Length: 198
Length: 181
Image: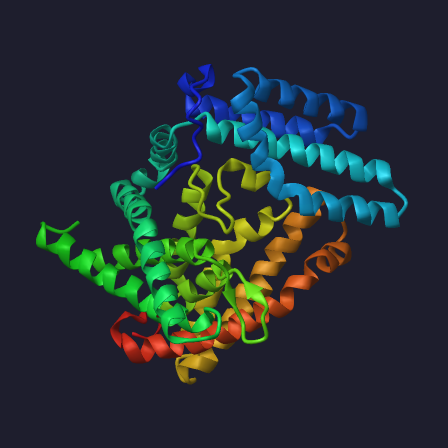
C-alpha cells in the first residue's frame, strides 16, 4: 500500500510527528481567526514558500495535491459573484487553500510509522480504561494489507463482468465483492485463532 | 472476538476498495462512486457498534496519510476541505444505519436495510456534511444545503442498492450479517 509520504527527503521528515500536528492545529486556528483578505494572501504566500524550500520537484508534486479543490473554488467564487460579495469569496478560497496545503505538508513529510506512533499515543487514555490498543493496531495493519487485495479482487470481478456482458460494469458486482470481503474476514479470523487468538 | 475484529477490518478495507475501483455505472449511464455505499453497508451488515468501528478505522487510516478516499485523496488536508463534515460523519452515519437496522428486526432485510441506509447514510451523514460546509465556507444552513443538494438523488439510489445488496448478503452469508444475528 502506497502512503502519501513524499520520497523527497526534507528536514521536516526528521521532526516529531506530534509537534508537527500541534503546529498545524495552531496555524489552522490562526487562519480561521484572521478575517482580513490581505493577511490570508500573506499566509498563502508563506505556505507556498514552505513548499518551495525543499526544491522544485517537492513544490510541483506537493501542490498538485491541491488540484482536487478546484471544483469547490469554482463554486465558492461563482456563488459570491452572484451574491455580490467577491472579497468574502476570495478570503474563504485563500484560507481553504492555505489550510489544506499546510495539512498536506504535515502528511507528506511524516512517515506512516511515525503517524502510527501518534495513534498509539492517542490511545493511551483508552488503555487506562481497559481497551487493548494492540487490537486497534492489528486492525489497522489488516486494512492496509487487505485493501490492495480487495482492489485486485474487485478488478477481477469487473473483468469477469465485461467478459460476459455487453453493458458497463454495474452495481451488481458489489454483492459478490462484499461476499469476498466477508469470506476473507472469516478465513483471517480462523487463522488468528489457529495461532493462539487475540 | 477474532471474527469481530477481522470483519471490522475487512469492511474498512471494503469502504476503501469501493472508492478506488473504477466508477460503477447505473442503468441510465450515471457514474457513481461507491464509497458512501460502503459506509451504508457497514451499518446494515455489521450493525451499529461494529459498523461504526469499521468506518472509524477507515477515517483514522485516511487521516494518518493513506490515500484511501475516492480519487486517491487522504491525509490531514481532508479535515480542512469543505467536504470535511461528510468525512467526520462517516462513523456516526454507519453507527446510525446499524442502529436503525437493529431496531427493525421484524421487517424484511431489504426494506429494513434500505430505510436504515436512508436514515444513517443520508439524513445523518448530510447533517454532518452541511454542518461542515457551514463551518468551512461560513454559510448558513440553507445555502449549505443548496450546495450539497445535487448529490442527494445519487445517495437515495445508493440507499436502495444498500437494501438490495444487504438482502442478497443475508441469503449468501446469513451468519455474517451481524445486524441480524
